[in-house]
Image: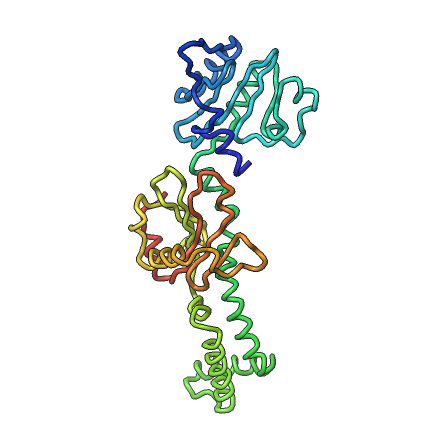
Length: 328
């Protein structure tokens, strides 16, 4: 549900406030009381909030960033809404009408008349923990963040290909062989090939300068994704571990100032520039890049509990510093 999670299941959502009225004693159906006992038995740290007559909001674990489930007892059935439910088969219209289920809630609402089924729906819920929210937002941002750097590198690759293609494929192979033989035989490279390679190299360097310093500065940089979750002090970062077979790593620091200086400097430039002043990545409106500095996405705002999602492009030396930080 992405941007519906906080408004439907959030602790502070108006529909999830504790029902308190000094002049009225809230009703609690026996069916809900029994359900609460069952959930409490399987989840000792679960918390319950009585939000209306015959209505409960349930937080299964302290790590949940919102309520995991909301349960109502109506007439003869449990109406169970969970944060991880996504129905592919919709409830019949007659049931929506009979139990007053809003059309907008149908995709995450289940209906059952048995205690066992209601209990199972709640137990099977995948909580919206910080780790799970982070996983979801990373799935949507890691690829475009990488494309932001790739976009500049593609310009350099195109330039290199165009410059050296003037030699022709056969001549390129001949030059490669000649340089290899000269190194092995410890002799000078043939003058005609050396002059041709030097001409192409000088042309490449001159054209590279014409592309601008920011494009040239992307050469050899690596991507470090940065995420800040709401109400969580930690700053999470993601990168490909170059020492472990390109394994994906997620770590955190409890203070952003513990990150290397190059990371902090580029984060500062991104925030000062603002997303509207950056260049689009391909045809994307939501993800923008500041060449050689980093990338910012608007998409993360669709995921509740995410405060910031961006990346910086850093040198291999700085990445070594990052890899030395405490693991998550």
